[in-house]
Image 1 (tube, rainbow, N blue to C red):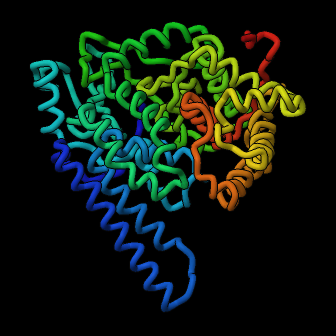
Image 2 (image 1 turned 180 degrees about the vertical axis):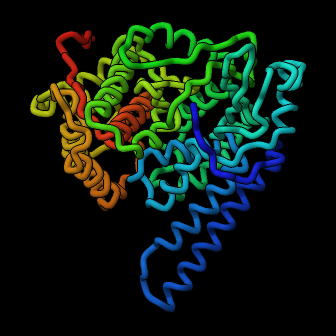
Image 3 (image 1 turned 90 degrees about the horizontal axis):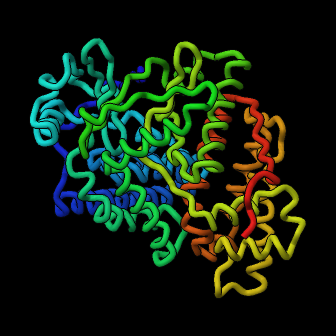
Length: 446
């Protein structure tokens, strides 16, 4: 867990009241409005010079506001950053800072949390405790501690984030609608799913329980390492676990490891997710680089189980029937699956169904390729160019934008997010892995 933070200025306070947080969102919207006015004024004088400057200004203003608010506001930015093709690069690059390098809280605020939660200061609980956070993300920050010769990681939740999830998501709707081409009513079912997961992420007692249960069940997996958790030093706002020594995943990638080691780590990552999805029906649905540490003996350290998606059995069967090799050639069966997974909407015309069938056929054929490959090379740039190219094509397609309707089951949000994050990390690692799924062994019958 040896993560080096840049010298980001610490925060001495977080807006916690609804009024304070609302004013921050309103102020952000006003800044975006000014940026648009500047953009259009400049465009009148100089002509269309592209939106890069506008995107950079908006990304800067949005991120600065969300990073001060912490919590669900910053978490949504982190989620968006995992799909670099969902938004212009300026947003994705800025929002990536939310993964493991958000501005940390000052030590006095951490001491206040300890007094409220454990009735003691950190120095009264541990032999040593780093006053400055070693890692700061969206929901909480991590401090390094020692006790009785053991090195520990202590995750401390930011004040007020648990109480502000629902109101923050309501306040964030206008910003989300301005960045994404989707109707307000269609945004609701997805925000309900996001809200449910975010409320769980702020429940550190639930995270502790899940962390212990999932790591025990995954202990038989090869080349993975989990921390031990300490309930006696954990509370609804604090989690204490072993410190895993090693390099942050991207820091490790930058050391240019050999191909054999890349494949070893990539296979461990694939097997970890494969086991959770197909055996546990519950998955660590936050696969961004900040949650993985590579140890000195090249094991995959997994350090965060805050976001876990439990996969309903009916959805699991429909989703993986859709991923079976050759499924798109079985037209009637394929169309029924698309309907069951809510890719078709009740008001769709036959023309719309034909159009979206074409899009989803290409998506399924492309994204399902690793499942039918005994050995899949995730470093293959051509494959990811196809994936990103299709995403760009869809995003710029007038008919798709005109529909501006949300399609797909709400359960797919975190499962798709999991696979997209997994593919992306394996691509960054440059791993070749055995990713084939033996569909004959899966119970996909209704």
